[in-house]
Length: 308
Image (cartoon, rainbow, N blue to C red; front, side, top):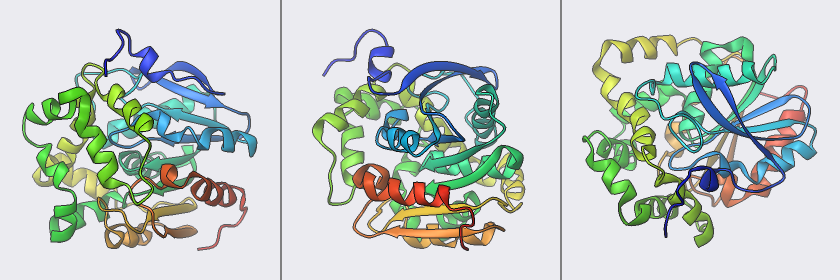
C-alpha cells in the first residue's frame, strides 16, 4: 500500500457530498457537506477522519438537514498545527466552524474523541449547540474518574497510556503502512468486522505526514493534565451541566469504553437525556450497523420533545 503524493486524494473521497475548507480558530479545516436545513456537525474519533460518517451524511441530508463532517485539527485534510490539541481549544475549533458556516447553532454528533469534544463544546459554548449526540465516549468528568479509579477501564484504555511515550507511538502507528490502525479498528469492532477496503482507507489517511503525531496529542494532554493545574481547571469547568437535549449511544460490546463508564454521564445533563445501548455492537456503532445508528439519530433529532 502506498500513499499518494498529496493528501487530497486520500482525504477528499468521492461521494454525493461537497468538499471544501473553512477557516476557524486560527486554522483551516476540511469539511464534507451535503444537504440543506438545520446544521448537523459530525465529529470523528481516533484513528479515523471525516469519512467515518459516510453513511450518515446522505441519510441526514435526505431527512432535511445540512450534514457536515469535519476533520479535526491535525487529521485528514485539516491543518496540522504545532500546538492547540487540548480539549478547550479543539472545542473552539468546532464552534468556530459552526460560525464560519454561517449557522446560528448546530446539533453536534461526536464519536470517541469527537464525542469528548462535543461534550466540551456543549459546556463551553452552549448557545452554539442546539442538541448533543455522543457515541462511545463518557462525559469528560466521567472519563477522568473512570480512568483514575476503575482498573478495568484503565486496562481497556491501555493504548492511551501507551501514547504517553515520546515519538515511539507515532512510529508504531505508521509502521508497515499503518498496520496498527487496521488492528485497532478490527480489535475494537464487534462481530461485524469492517471490510479490508474500509480499513485501508483509514491506514492511508494515518500515513499522511504528521497525522499520527497530531492524532495522539489530544490523548497526551488528557492524561498528562490529570495532575496539572490546567487539567484541574478543565475538570472544574466541566462541572457546568449540559443544558441541551442529549442522546448517548453505545455498543454493548465496546472493548475500549466500558458501558459502565459511559452510562453514568447523564448526571451531568440538566436536559432531556436518552441512553441507547446497541446490542452486539462494538466501539464503532455508526459503522458497524449504520442503519440502526442513523435511524436512532434521525428519529431523535426530529423528536420535538425528547424524553428524559
